[in-house]
Image 1 (cartoon, rainbow, N blue to C red):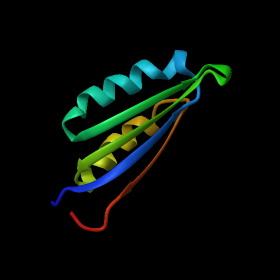
Image 2: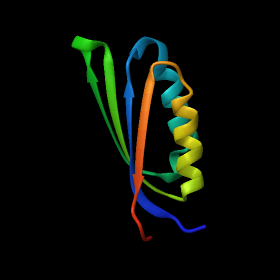
Image 3: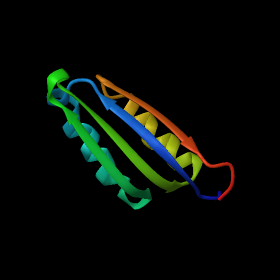
Length: 83
């Protein structure tokens, strides 16, 4: 399967409950992550993480599925049409 460039956007709605689990998963999938930006928003006790990835659709689906199953998280992704 071909790898494609894309992004994954993650909103963590409760940093205390979910951030550690999300960070653990991101470490597991570190080989596909090109860049990561994390912005804590203390006024709302949330965090927004943006990832740039070079991955197959299966890899992105596995990562986003696992993140999406963590309570208090929302995740969306998009990949380029061609590698």
